Image 1 (cartoon, rainbow, N blue to C red):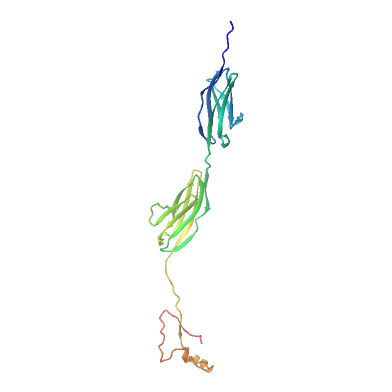
Image 2 (cartoon, rainbow, N blue to C red; image 1 turned 180 degrees about the vertical axis):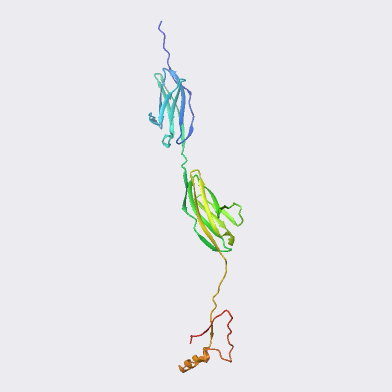
Length: 257
């Protein structure tokens, strides 16, 4: 009596769900399928066949588990994957969404704008400013004359924003704040520093005294009178009050006639 051969259409015993994987790493899609005769498997990405190459490999283990290996994973590997199992009795399939997380690019800190030497009068506010970029965003350290400035230092506050702007605000500035200031920016990729000088000026006002006009000497009286000029109306006389110069003021004979 002839033995009747039985056939079964493909059926997935094991199938992965949606996945999230990191760029640059190994990604593995495993599935297990049954069916008679043994089904053939085809992998599709966004409806197009995935062909074996240097970064894409299809493996079958003795346990019957089929694997699609992607190593290293790239952004081009993101999308909808479909595994199609086919034999003479029919076909079956499953699909999943693979999301690829972009690889973090690491860049050492770099100054776009460095600290600048500056000076302000005592009692005024002053800002030491610069701009730094890096990935991941750097951590900042301030020093004055090679000594670390704590974050709670009196009259000093440290500021930064997402654009890379960094500022040390001193308010109000005192004479003791003068010195060399260093900002260091550090992340996983490296460290950079820049230094600038801060000078604090004492507040003082120097007024230049104006010379006081006095009548010319007697020798000039004769010269001026001979020229027909009325010198007595231009200068104080004995009847009018005299101007007395202070010790710090310069006394000159006036030429303004």
